[in-house]
Length: 254
Image (cartoon, rainbow, N blue to C red; front, top):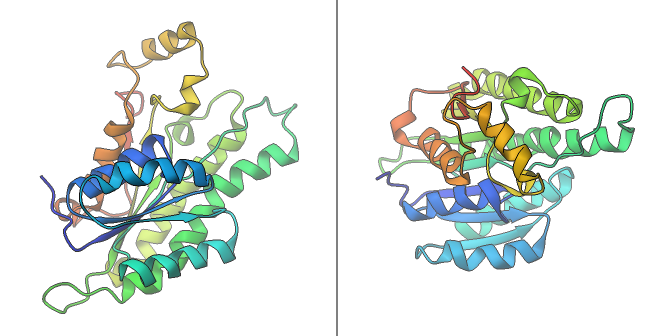
């Protein structure tokens, strides 16, 4: 079992799905958690679920595409929980359409939520993470894990906006790792495949069966599968890993 005692994790898009599973995974191992979502009703439901592990939990309502709200959320996390050791950039949406039919609003909404938010939050935590010190008093930095997607690796019909955003997340991860490794801030990404979330719940069973047939392990993944990968990348077990993208896809991406 990993030990995150004394550490603080800020997880965006944590009102449900992969984000909530990730928040629970950190709390299970001793971390205090800042839950952040655009929907306050989801936060209200999620908070007691994460609090059940016995650690401090705060909730933050935020539009992740707005710089002022992002900066305030980071300041509020530090003010209430003392520090930020782990940032999980998980907030994401889809607005699928064929390129010829996709309008500018659909493009902008996905790029702003899925990619711009990664830029805003990662920039906002650099200084707080740079001030972190371990039990020995030495600088210990922090860790960022970004949720990308296998669609960012190989594209998909009807998802030009989503694929472009997630490909951008992957490249941003590599660049951030090169720029801030010297400050002991690691940055990695996970690239989930087809996972059982609200994005796949709307699909017919026939569509889900076809998706499963595309996966070597012949099944859709669970949010917890991705959460465990994120937790590993944020742990001391991954202390020498940065700038990498780990596909959590049942074998869809190699």
